[in-house]
Length: 417
Ligand code: SR1
Ligand code: MG
Image (cartoon, rainbow, N blue to C red; front, side):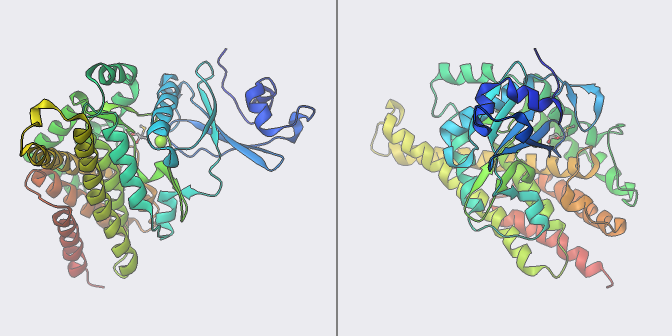
């Protein structure tokens, strides 16, 4: 029977769950040996680290409400089922980038997994200005492989539709539909504003016909375009890493959606990290810039390679003629061009919502000087507006970087100090 665990009751639960007990204790050892602490700082769930005998595990439990709002916002625990199933699928496709799962219980809405105690959350590391040489290589592979191997390009029609059915994640999709695609563009009570942000910046994008039309287009795609199994919440807080390894965690928002959503959410978080940097942080800016460029370019190349290699293996009759493979390659370029426009569109929506919506990001909220923070937020909103309106006309990631750079330069040039 389901019960919400806490620091005290968790020991008894482990005592009665042999699979977990055996991970930490010898059979004759008492549960008093267990050290438990709750370390979750996310918006949805409770996360415990449990240690004994130099061993440790992570236990993550979903509660029947949205943690960051409280019990007034009920949320079904079924999200843990989606998280467990998505972790399993991602592990099958990309083993080096997904933590090991040791135990799971649908009844208790919990999962027990590898404690990544030699790894840290990417967002925090970016705030501390740490560089990771393999990050873009790893994340681009994770994106290209999870998104390709769950798509119609790779799966049979039946298997793909079974996948779509398995991952009908109504409630968490609803959160995204509300908090990314709806509330930030209306006067909604859940929105939160930096008191120093001039509301004219908010009015400007909220009353821009072309922004509104583009946001609705992205929302509609999110709701209808079941291209591949998405992580669904791939921001920099969903990655744990060190200098050698990177792990993608927290896929409870997983569902079949548009490929550009995962790529766009991740790039948006890099872009906002870039905007949070000061004028003189030249070296780190260069690094974040390279992450944005490399992630997109490597992802696009790897996804295309996956498509071409798969086509070579399948040798479909449709392309069985002398120029067949190069014509298929032409198709892969057209496909990636569409994904790029979607990526820019979804990235822009993430930038709007992280600025005026409920869930913010520490890269920017951590800036204590509210006036300075407001200037950064205004730049994020302006850049998101430019990007979303020109998403179909932008041909390369370098053009995206040039738009970001231009907004940043104009701001620094207007600054007196
Ligand atoms: C209302 S929940 C806020 C956000 O937390 C999650 O990490 C998702 O990004 C969601 O939109
Ligand atoms: Mg999360």
